[in-house]
Amino acid sequence: MSVREELDKLGRKQIVCDRRWPDGTRFRRAAPNRTVAEDLDARIRVSVADGMWRKLKRRLEHGTSKQEKLVDFADRYLNEYCKAHNRRWERKLTSLKPIKQRLGKLPINAIRPKHVYRYIRWRKEQNPAITNATVNRDVTIFKHVLEYAREVGVIRRNYIRYVKKLPEVRKERPRATDDQVDHLLACLPEKLRPVFGFIRETGCRLEEGLSVMHHQIRRDERVVVFTDNTKSGKFRLVPLTAKCLEYVDAYPVLPGCPYVFWSEYTKTRYNNLYPYWYEARKKAGLPWFQIKDLRRHYGIVLSESGAEMHVIQAVLGHSSVATTERYYAHFSPQYATRRALAVLEGRGRKTGGTSSRENLQLVGSSEKESA
Image 1: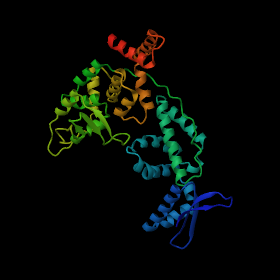
Image 2 (image 1 turned 120 degrees about the vertical axis):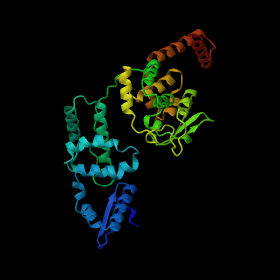
Image 3 (image 1 turned 180 degrees about the vertical axis):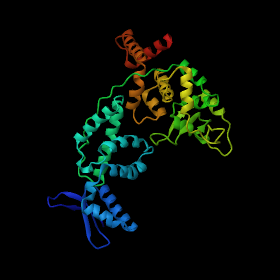
Image 4 (image 1 turned 30 degrees about the vertical axis):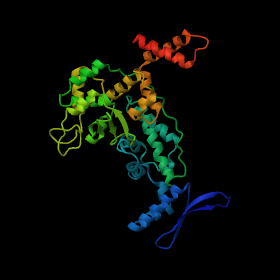
């Protein structure tokens, strides 16, 4: 067997990839784990089958892989890893482009933390308006490139793994009101209002709304199932309001087209609606309003209406409650203050044998009375 477990001279267990080349010579290398060893063994077998084993042999035995330039390995990272593991791997091209431009000529095994810090400084000097969050995203992808290089045996250690990121300052974005949302939707072409209205009523992302199909609309259960093109790759159920069903019914079923929202020109789903949105928000006098603000508005309405964070997390499809709290809990400080005041006042109304459950009931009743 080409991949097996052995003991080294010090008595430590190690995973070894041991295989012979077609010319009879032997290749033997220890790997950090079985996955890396099996990946290396698979690369050897594929190269033998393709007749390209001599090139791979030179790279592995003569150290050419250790001298591989970052610009070349970044492309390999995209093809071998990102295209297989990331649903939207094209987004990483934006971060890898400046990295390759600045540090692409460096051998990948020579990259150290100082190079990352120099890159950060250069990135900020090239574009003073760039945000720290954007630079941090570059650094995160940079780290993962080298981590992948370590996993496949190109380098022995990822020296930039613990490089510190820039501090991110979250600025408060303008918060859209119901009237502003209604006004902006009214400025859209009449044919497109149901599309963005559907996004508003479900809190879905633009791509999720444009790609929704008829079989995802479950009228009996009053839910829509988002399964395709979700960011996390996981399905989620979102309730359908009566208004949302009106938006769906605004588009009759087109024979041969599985999509709910379709273009009368292409007879299939919409692809790019950004120009119409930009024109509408300019007409409405709301240049700051982004399409994803409809999704934020949906989450804020749920939050201020008393929905628990784990409920909002479920319908929005966030990976964790922490993400939901970070983006939606801070939008309603006055609401949080009112809730805290109600709890404190409810606690003081009764003393002695009043339980916590009774206090919560008092708080709930006081809120209903004030409403």
